[in-house]
Image 1: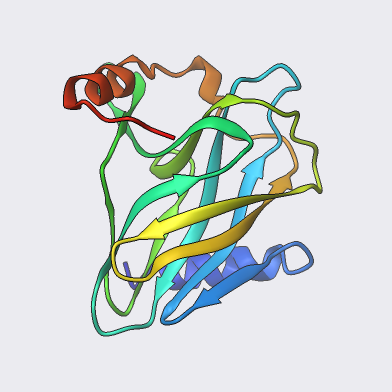
Image 2 (image 1 turned 135 degrees about the vertical axis):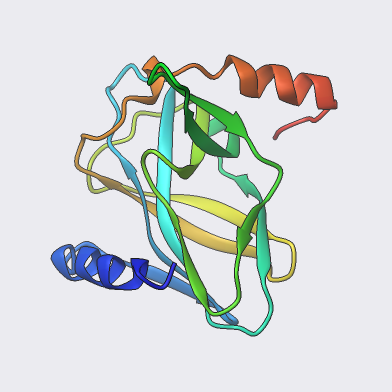
Length: 170
């Protein structure tokens, strides 16, 4: 993961005018963003980098926002045929002294049941919930459109898994 830091630095410098971050204790949430989805989209992906400068790991265990009926941490997986699907994960490890990327094609925040149109340049509130650090208020920046179209991906496994585990996602 240490090799990711130069890439992350390059990404942040290239978007210095739009990058933003939130600090909370030893955690820094770097440029939480949502690429602007289509006006009729019911799903969107949220991305960011989470830097843990502490001596102990933490875990992202939940996400809350008023812009969607449900917000979850998902992992994208690609099968042998090259078909991408996503699955809900109960927690995402944030190792001590490292940076974890939530990015297209990997771990990300999945926003399902969007209830408002997201427009480039807008800022939307959300809360990240960590096992150790607790609740951290952030704002997702709505970035220019592009990237993965989440509406074309299979989310059926995540919904079935949540139902099977008896989870209620608010």
